[in-house]
Image (cartoon, rainbow, N blue to C red; front, side, top):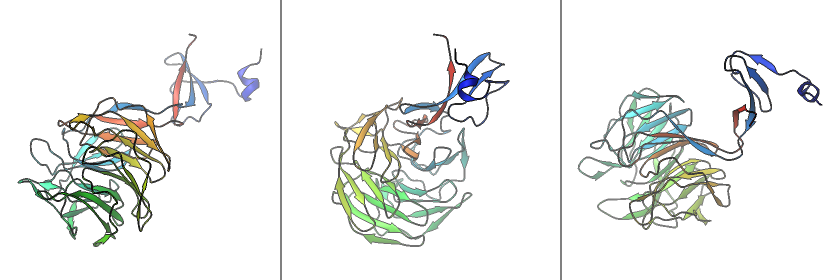
Length: 324
């Protein structure tokens, strides 16, 4: 019988604890738990529940990656200025926004981001933009058009604000580009929409979903123009998103009829949307951060604090071997 050493050229390691950075194909015996373990790649993506926000809320916005994110604003018992930072394990309250707001857009990272637009107490839509330096928020130049429910993507020096609603006016197709100092109107979306989701950069973006009627429409931005591409499989609005214009993720939201929260998740490969494993908790009006292979979803209606972590297919995971 061929042995593991003959196949791999090494013996199975005996360790008192699991290695901190195992590589795919590595096998070891954990002498503390008395089990044989190995490192493998996931075959399908899945969501796992992780530590919750300190303050449950909906209509919040988020930026960052799955191990370093920000959750800003939203509705708690009223429109809020609360901000929390995620370090990959826990949420910690940090300095508040200058303006209480919900249904805002955002772009950037957990140490360098902007939050813009939204609606404040009294149901007044905002053009106000705030910049985060990792410690404090500073007011910077306003959007040209005040709005709520816009898509936000990019960085704190190169961002896009797409669509939204000028309440008590209607839904709009207006798009503005941020250069780190000022907002400039650029070419409009092809479809008027509100409560939309956007991912990518300010020169290569994807905008999808939205109202009215829970759009599945998807548009691709090349830095100059928007082009309609293949629709989502599940029409929705107020979903969360992560990733880029060629490798993205859409999850949750409200599917028709209005008020029907969904747990559905879909991945984008640059051409088509493909169904993925669902969130553990159906939710809308929440926030996302990260990439198509490692994403975070947090908050949602009604005032959820639950946070979920997405691990995409092909990610490295530790498996325990059994004799059954």
